[in-house]
Structures are given as C-alpha cells and as structure tokens.
Image (cartoon, rainbow, N blue to C red; front, top):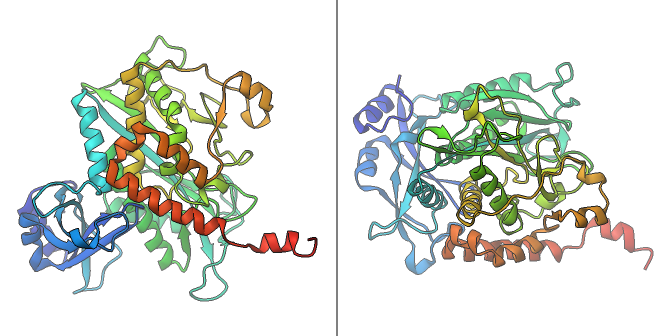
Length: 449
C-alpha cells in the first residue's frame, strides 16, 4: 500500500502499476473552482512528472486568451490517489493535482492553487503556518424521472436525526471513499433541512485543505450517483429552509504552537488572533463575492436560517459572522476562529487566499477588535445595530462585486489577472439574472397592473 502524500516518483509509478491503473487524470481547477482534467495513459505519466504536460488554456474560465493559450501542467505527486470507485479492469484511473505554468516556466498568475500558495508563502515568510478546516454542507435529491434532477429531498430527517435519516448508508459509502482518497473524516450527520447533510474532515494546512475540499465535492457527487441520487452544494436549493454553508475554521501556528491561543484571555484569544479577526471583519464586504460567489448565495445569506448576515463576532452567538468555538485549556492547539459566511460553491483556493490576506492585514496594521455581540442579531433592531456599529453583508452578488472592486487587500491577494476575470464573469452572471422575468413576478404583477 502506497503511503499517502509520498512524492517519490518511482514509488508512485510502481503503486499505479500494482493497483492496475491504466489512466492518470491530471487535475486542476478553473477560476470558479470547477475541476478540470487532462487524461493521459499510464505510459505517459513519467514524462508528465519530469517535464509537465502541455494543454490549451484558452477555453478555461479565467485562464488565457487564445493568443496566449499554451500552458503546461506539473503534477504535485503528494496528491496522487487511485480513484476507489473506478474498479473496471483496464479502465482504472488515478488522479494527481497539478500546478499550471507558462511556456517560459513561470507560474501562471491565473492558477487558483498557485494564488493560494503565494499567500501561504507570504504568511510563512512572516513565520506563520495557516491551517483551515471547512465544513461543507450538501443536499441529496432524488428524482421522479430517470436523469431529471428535481428539488425532492431524499428523506424527511432533521438535525442529527437517526430514525428518519435514509442516508446513513450513503454517508458511510461517502466516508469510505473520502478516506480512500486520503481525506481523514471526523464526523458525519444529518443537517437541519430535509435531505441536507454534513461530513467534516480534519483540518490541515490551507493548500492541502483546499485540495481536499475540491476532492470532497466530486467524490460525494460520484458516490451519490451510484446510489441513484444527486448531491448538490447549491447554497439555497429550496425556498423556506436552511441553506448549505461552508463554515471555515482558521488558525495560525508559529514554531509549532498555536499563535491564536492565550490562556489569560476570557475568550482564549491572543492579541495576534484579535488583530486577525479584526482584519477578517474589516474585509468581509470586500471578499464576500469570493466566499459566496453565485446569485443563489445571497438567498442563503438572509436572517432567520442560521446564516450570518451581520458583521460581528462572538462565542455562543451563531448569528455572528465569526464564532469562537469554546477552547479547552488542555488542547490549546485547537484554538481557532470560525468564519460562517462562505458557502460550498466558492473556489476554496481563492477563498482561503482572501481570508488569509484579510487576517494578515489586520495583524500588520494591528487593527483593534470590536466588542463581541452575544445577543441574537436577527432580533436586534436597526437602531441598536447602528449604535453598536454592526454592519450587514451585501445583499446581492451585484452589490458584493462593488465592494470587491473597492478592496485593495482582496484585489492584491487575487492578483490583477484573476480579479479582472472574476469580476467580468460574475458581472455577466449578475446581469443575466437581473434581466430574467420569473414566474414569481408574473404571478404577482401580471393581473394587477
């Protein structure tokens, strides 16, 4: 059995042959976090490891123009995995995640994985290791007709339900598949809404976690399909019920110790952690277009469904944007902050990059952290929120893009290329949406006016 994360070429090639692998998927992500792949026969893998594999990037969202389309993929051998649900002899696949380079050998500035690596390296130069742990929620849907996806929840269960949870076996298969892909699962359970679930995996350094989050999404979709179900990470697929978030836990380590921990602080937070949180809160409006990147995202970010809307922090208040999980003094390394606004349609590489950039800006500028708000913000009046300087996140993708365009810290974290391509693509999405005439509008206005 191959040791996970080995980077020894000969060991990986030998393992691929032992496992009966015939094809290698050279994987990467486009700007929107969609997994792309160039498939090569095993016989070409060694050459790809040594020299990379050329591909045309002109048709990939956020990549090059036609005049500058030639790029090459270079495998990160630590991400090599044999795909566990691919068992047909002669057709077995393995995957390896790649970084993207230009013909002259320089990293491609539009590579989301490379963007996160640059931010992680900036933190490392300051002496910090950035760890993240996302919680991706999802829905399982069934359909009345083969091949037709409808918002029909797979079960009638609720939060942590057992007797009405029809997906226990499905989640068990998902967990086994994730662990076979090198992802250490910690818990799984039914979520609040009917047909909604959550599987949590262990935190790691930000690049590894982003790799795992991308792998998580397509693994769960593949397993669900084998059960005749559809797995969706759409933030708000059903009106009137809780949507799916991607709450993300973050911490900085220095010299092997958690730099966020202070035993003498009431919340267990160091001064550095407080600066970090202040930075994230200050840039929340500027980075929400990255963390909640679809029109549908803002139908989740509304009061009343445990989705954070107001820019504040607290320990016990789940209506706050940032929550501080209770800290066990015997486990100081578990000290972390939980950002609750991202949803699972985000590109995790870009999401973690802008979160880190915002936090580091708070540290570098020594931003003061506002007082926590432990009251339920959903039931707090506008006047009181204003008196306590509690602002709200943008209410639409269009508004979020305006704030993104004004935030230099977030723009610099993305880089000029990705920023311009992202705003261009998402502005087009917003325009297409706002020009639609919906059935709701026809029912409401057609007969009246």
